[in-house]
Image (tube, rainbow, N blue to C red):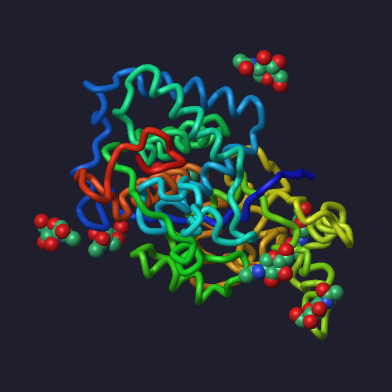
Length: 332
Ligand SMILES: *[C@@H]1O[C@H](CO)[C@@H](O)[C@H](O)[C@H]1NC(C)=O
Ligand SMILES: *[C@@H]1O[C@H](CO)[C@@H](O)[C@H](O)[C@H]1NC(C)=O
Ligand SMILES: *[C@@H]1O[C@H](CO)[C@@H](O)[C@H](O)[C@H]1NC(C)=O
Ligand SMILES: *[C@@H]1O[C@H](CO)[C@@H](O)[C@H](O)[C@H]1NC(C)=O
Ligand SMILES: *[C@@H]1O[C@H](CO)[C@@H](O)[C@H](O)[C@H]1NC(C)=O
Ligand SMILES: *[C@@H]1O[C@H](CO)[C@@H](O)[C@H](O)[C@H]1NC(C)=O
Ligand SMILES: *[C@@H]1O[C@H](CO)[C@@H](O)[C@H](O)[C@H]1NC(C)=O
């Protein structure tokens, strides 16, 4: 059982693709060697801060992955998710309680930024740091290794209503989830591969405990739920549970970035109803079975989709709406 302030509803995204090229040909602009001349110490510097955070608390990996998804899905990968609300503007990160993001996850990016500013001030964007810290933490959690692309600039606006409008929700039905991902050119297979990231995810009891207390007018408990998972939900979320309590989305190996999440779905042990629906729905069940049978296949699709996600509506030309922020929480 975990208790986190501002914990996270972890719902992110996707995968299968043939090559990595997308939403507006940005992959030709983003490059892995973008900072080779201007900040050669980038990756080694961030590797230290990422390790420090992960060693302190492994759940930071899920928190940062959620931040990465949220940042890219809402108005592009431009670190708008890190901007603070002001007197006159409610920012994305404060969109609503249920979509709240992990404070520790934000701190992982902030610590990376502070360390990088020491070695190459004013050079590396917060948006690129979100990408890099996410990559580092996935590796630390035992997941696939891949080379991130860089060259994103930071945006100068962040609006709660944008987040509310576009983020998927844990209780959305499958048709709505598929349409949500399709709206940003992600197939249901890509959605599935990305949602596999729930292998290290967690969610507030309020996102799933209705499945054992108040499922429907005819059944108190969700009839599809495996008895093992049912017991576990009662344990994690007793009646009257503190609203800050969260439960793991992969009860088998919650800290390992492995494909156990897909095995759990086959066993009807998915925690979120929308995760379990990935197995129940004929459109995504073959993918669940394929990823459960072959972790390498899932890793391949997960990485491809993460790269695709990282290209969404990126800003690459400095201007009135794009800059390299000095402090990730505030525009310059
Ligand atoms: C949509 O996604 C596919 C698969 O990743 C990609 O090949 C295609 O270029 C994308 N289309 C646009 C308009 O981004
Ligand atoms: C991407 O590149 C192709 C081929 O060069 C071009 O036809 C297309 O318009 C470009 N898409 C965007 C959104 O710039
Ligand atoms: C990792 O965490 C342990 C305690 O959780 C601590 O003793 C150790 O010093 C940490 N290592 C690093 C390198 O921070
Ligand atoms: C947010 O969570 C609360 C319980 O914490 C619930 O009552 C409410 O319906 C949820 N709102 C949305 C939009 O899901
Ligand atoms: C159970 O769900 C119904 C309908 O969604 C709701 O009106 C009722 O308040 C819920 N009861 C509890 C105990 O949560
Ligand atoms: C319930 O989960 C167990 C593993 O915990 C599995 O062996 C069993 O087959 C599952 N039951 C169903 C109906 O899927
Ligand atoms: C698993 O998937 C990988 C990547 O597609 C493939 O190369 C490999 O042959 C697959 N393994 C099996 C046992 O099917």
